[in-house]
Structure formats: structure tokens, C-alpha cells
Image (cartoon, rainbow, N blue to C red):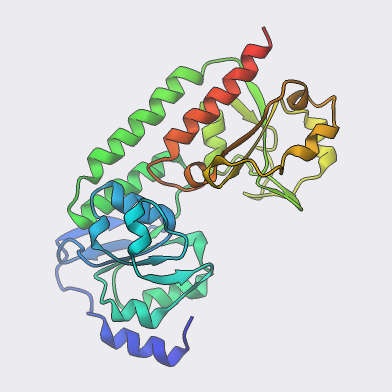
Amino acid sequence: MRAAGAAAVCVMMLASAPAVAQVAVVDDTGARVELAQPARRIVSLAPHLTEQLFAIGAGAGIVGTTDFADYPQAAREISRVARAHSVDLERIAALKPDLIVTWGSGFPPAVTDAIRRLGAPVFVSEPTTLTDIASSMARLGALTSTPGDRVATEFTQRVEALRQRYGGRPEVSVFYQVWSAPLMTLSGRHVVSEAIRLCGGRNVFADLVPIAPQVSTEAVLAANPEIIVTAEPDGRATGVLDAWQRFGRLAAVQSGALVTLDANRINRHGPRMPDEIAVLCEAIDRVRRTRR
């Protein structure tokens, strides 16, 4: 992030808030986001938000995004104004955005505060449920005058179809591995844990308090999950689950249920998530079938 002096210049470069709002929504922090007219120049500071904007038909209005926004293909051609945990305030200001959308957990609070001081309206995304993802697309649709409601409804219908198909089936215990060294997982507070539940799975570490807790190998062995799941870009297995093979008594090993999902779909809070939830549900269902 650039120096405070550059940030001060940026504030002067951006338009002040309009006197009368014609478009208004509430973001995931509870803040009211008001625009005098639908946004036409958008800076999107998270890959999932860039995907959402393209999905609702507002992708052409994105003038700046992050290093990791790579879907759809057109997103790769957009100017990069941010990377992990930092943003270039001066470049964002030079783009003269009329809306900045950002991920609450994607940057330290001080960075988000600096983004707000630029003067453009800021929409903060912090989805904790699948419903929040649909709602985000609907609200972004309102801010950009695009069919976000329709895309949100389609997303919800796809999720509910999976819930109806798999949710009532016999429960399968699941360990979701986020990282191998140190060994990390997700608690029940994470949206991926909701995806596991709607597939009829049970996250064996759902009761832990941190959203991404560190766990021990012994704790996993004690939980004895029937399936172990991780995610890698494009679903390409890199061998991070191979270490579990040495525990021959582990239920997931005995049934061969070591599964790698596409991280670009399951870990991003975007419109493609139901596609990978369907893959997860089918993997869990295969475990059910091995019981018979």
C-alpha cells in the first residue's frame, strides 16, 4: 500500500458522496451503500466478487481487480490494482471508480479503512452462508442495474436442488483438509461446512471455535472420518492426501475416499460453487454406497 500522502491525494481525486441516492443496498458489514446512479466503473478487490460481477452481466464495468482474479477469461485482461493483503491506492484512485467492492477478510482492517477514505462508495462482502452468496449477487445487481436477482435465484435453486437430493440421506463423516503442514481444517462456521451438511455429510470438526482451526493427526484418527476432502486449483491432486494412506485402519483409507475438489470453485464464494458442491455430494454419496 502507498504512503499516507498518496492516500490523501487519492481522496481529493475521487468524487464526494451524492446528495440523493437513487440506488442503495446494505453490505455484509451492515453499512448502507448509496449511489446516485448505477455503477459503471468498478474496482473489484476479490476473485469471488469479480466472478459474481461477470455472472450478473457487470463484468465489462470492472476497471481494476486483484492478481488472483482469473475467471472468466476476460477477467485476466483487467488492470491489477491489488495483491494478497495489499492494494495500490494511487492506482485505484486514478481509475476513478464509482464503486469499490472488497472482501472483508481479504485485507487487514487498516487497508479496508484506507480504501474507504478514497471517497468512492465501498461494498464489503463477507459471506458466511450460501444464502449470503446469492444475496451478494442480488445486491450487486441493484448497484449495477444488471439482473443480479435472476442470477441469485438460479444459484439458490441449484443449491436447494442439491439439498433436496442429498440432505436426507444417511450421514457420512467428513474431514475437510485445508492445509497439511500445519494440519488445518474448517469449523462449522464456514460456508464449505454448510455445503458438507447439505450433501448429508457431517464435518467431524464442526464444533471447533476458530473458523479455520489447526488440528492434530491424532484428532483426525480419533474422529475416523469416512471421507477426507481437500481442494486444489482445477481439482488436480498434488499428493497432499497421500500421507493418510499409511493409516490403514482409517475408514476413509479403507474405502479409498480421499477426494480432491476444485479449489477455484469450492473455496470461492462465487456462482460456480454449486457446480463443485455437486461433485462433493456425489463423492459423499459414493461412500454411502460402499456401506451396502
